[in-house]
Image (cartoon, rainbow, N blue to C red; front, top):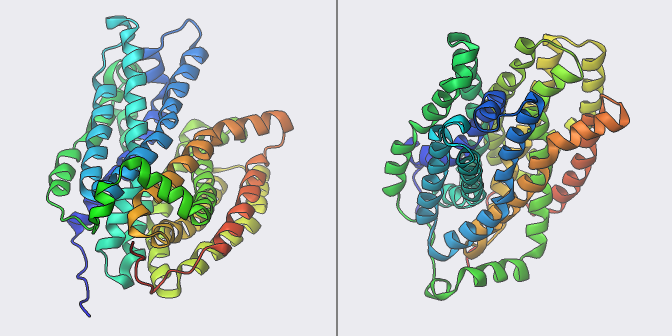
Length: 425
């Protein structure tokens, strides 16, 4: 039996680039939402300008499910490599349009139209990115290292959060507020695009991993989706629920800066450390989770950290609210990120391992895109609404507990895939 060699670092980098760009873009946009609002959505009321800016960012979630369905099916129909080339090109184009679009003052209503179009394009590309890229990683990996390699998809999110936080923090201290509003925020987006040419070059040279049969090649993308929905509804539903839980905990972590300012009344310099500690712990513990999943199995690494998080999150938020400080903020954010990343690393490899090759990319893309759209895209709104309605600052903990219980039930029903050959057909 031939043992696969471990893929090179360049191949891993090419596969995780899209996911890394997504979280860099997300964090950068959130960091400079006020400046972007003033540039493209001017209003006499700065709150209205900010709300429109944030809503425009949320528009990108609308096209994610469509991208997951279309590009995921394309990856199973034509191959992982062309799908990954398509997604990274569209993603970079969207970021470039956003970075270079003139202000409202310069071109009027064409500016917000271009920004919305860029966000829709990015959402479409991002919806179809994770499935083909993760499928490629586990298909090219040796059987005993699939967890470690796939976990880089989660770790890349942490690296991007950390990088975007450092870039935003540095620019905000080097440039005046007037300069940041005028054009400084564009530098952060353009810096993220610097890695795209290298990623495109490497992706273009990648070998194809999917052994697509002549029958599948003759199928249309719609037939691929019909096969996924009709033949694999249970694995798809379990994947959606497992990814939902991971997504909510991730986006609660991203909400912690806002939470620290509004619910805990901490100063902004203290609040913005939350994504930094979240980035560091996500990077470290996702890689640890992938290693543990290869060593002990997918299910125990999915379940145990998630159960611990369900038990620990309420006391952690209770302590944070009773003793609000930089230390308690870092502890709570780090706890969520560490336990969530351990579990998510096992989920991101278990889902594609449970699906046959002919629907592997479309299955993961569909589950991931719908979970992120429905739950990731609404988490910050839901948390703000829950706190406002209940007047309970512990509402985020209850939201995580509820979603965590549903996710744990789904994970418990998933098959253990460690050591099994990838299903074909």
